[in-house]
Amino acid sequence: MAFFRWANLFIFIFNCFLTATPIFSDSKAIPNFLDLAKEPHVFDWMVDIRRKIHENPEVAYEEFETSKLIREKLDELGIPYKHPVAVTGVIGYIGTGLPPFVALRADMDALLIQEAVEWEHKSKVAGKMHACGHDAHVAMLLGAAKTLKDHEKYFNGTIVLVFQPAEEGARGAKKVLDAGVLENVSAIFGLHLHQKLPLGVVASRPGPLFAGGGLFEAIISGKGGHAACPQQAIDPILAASNVILSLQHIVSRESDPLDPQVLSVATFHGGVALNVIPDSVTIGGTYRVFSRKSSLQMRHRIEQVIISQAAVYRCNATITFFDEEKPFSPPTINDDGLHEYFHSVAKSLLGADKVKDAELVMGSEDFALFQEALPGYFFFLGMEDVSVEHLQAAHSAYYKVNEDVLPYGAALHASLAVNYLAKLSHEVAAVEEKYHDEL
Ligand SMILES: [Zn+2]
Ligand SMILES: [Zn+2]
Image 1 (cartoon, rainbow, N blue to C red):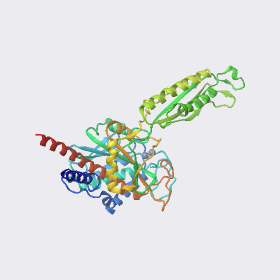
Image 2 (image 1 turned 180 degrees about the vertical axis):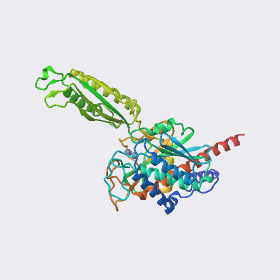
Image 3 (image 1 turned 135 degrees about the vertical axis):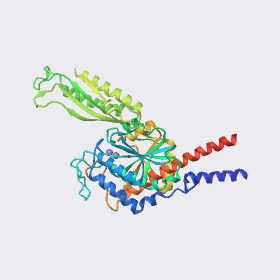
Image 4 (image 1 turned 45 degrees about the vertical axis):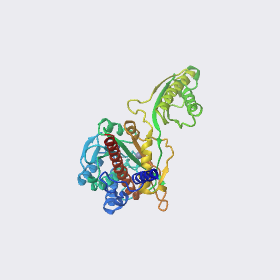
């Protein structure tokens, strides 16, 4: 009987902590951040920020005005920050300034796309657009900061706000890490808007989420000549064509079908005249894999197949994987423990029916670089409202953000951070109590 009483008490405490109203380290109830973020003075504030950034899109490492706006808003909230970090990045701090530290990340950069959506806050910069929702990511993290700052005195530890530049293929995350601002951080959380998930629904998975990706380019050299006398030339066009066909067999015949991989040749340049066999052909493309091991294997075979197949046609080949300029971007691997934690917080905030499993994504996300350095968790946040419209995919000139999503992102950020600090405090307290009891 006593056992059952203790067991029930344990289950009660466990449930309180994980699924019901979690508590701050000093036993104050954690507020419902979704209600707070939906309040007009927070919601309208976020919408205004998002629209300002949308009107003035800035690409990788050029986010100077975006960075300035973020700092103005942090000043307005009385939140201290570090700047510059990774050229335009801003790192804000809410809390005691002491450990434990938990980080929240928003990316800031736009894309080289001409916006095709006609609306009041259309991009004012020709050829540039926030077509991946990073304007909304920044607004949501600032919204989280606004609600968190009001409750700062109740939590034990520090929330690190990471406004990161250059996510779109320029490895801004690496520069942020190199600046040393995430040392001693226990965990980092990040999100991405998703146009095909319903508004307020989140989705993710433990382990791999986004693929890792690498680029390659090969020059296949033969001997140019008159196209009417191919016997006097060494034809690199034919060699490159067969190289491309052979490369397609790596995934279809050699890779494990249960380990998703993609290899695409995306460029083919050779020749200028219709009656001349060129000296060389340049081909290039990308591969996507879900582990560093698969990446090494893929690179090895790409190199081997190109060189060997070119040799069949008496051509030479040289290959680059752009290790300096655009190195392999690793897969985004979610920490298993953080997945359980994310589920408990998201279900408590949104309801169990709003938390879904995500499919693997063959695209890449540089949040992966943070996850190589510390435990990290990345998830999608849905914004589709079919009663209004079907939204276009990210990187489309017709991309739109349903701004009703902003409170959800702000609330998820805030809840994940605050509950995580509370969880760490509880763990430390439990260890101390055990140590005390043993004494
Ligand atoms: Zn993107
Ligand atoms: Zn993006």
